[in-house]
Amino acid sequence: MDPEEQARRPEPQLRLRAIDRQRGWIGLIAILIALVIVAVLAQTALKTNGLMPGTGTSAGAGPRGPGAAAPAEVDPGAAPRAPRAPIERARGLEQQLQRDAQELGKRVDEQTK
Image (cartoon, rainbow, N blue to C red; front, side):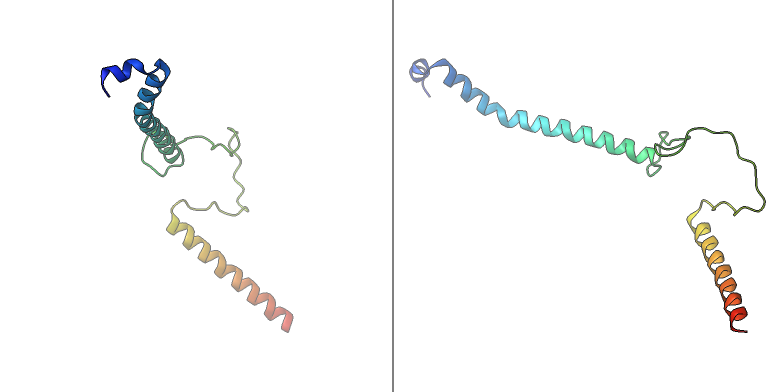
């Protein structure tokens, strides 16, 4: 566009063309900012849940858990606490199922006598 044509154009029309050229860059910057925000939130959530190594793991109760409380007395008759490792939990569950099956078998045998 030559200078004479630019001189004949009204001022708002020239501004509109400049904004149209920059609209793509503004959109890209907005998308990048949104992506950074989502990445920071995801990283925080993963650290909080213990799925990502870091110092952000919660030592206390989680957001749904109860607040701090006094230690409970140990009841020897109560069920044992579940082990933490997944393989230990699976073994504990297997043992509990075997005990339950044996008890059920005894009850069935007693009822059929």
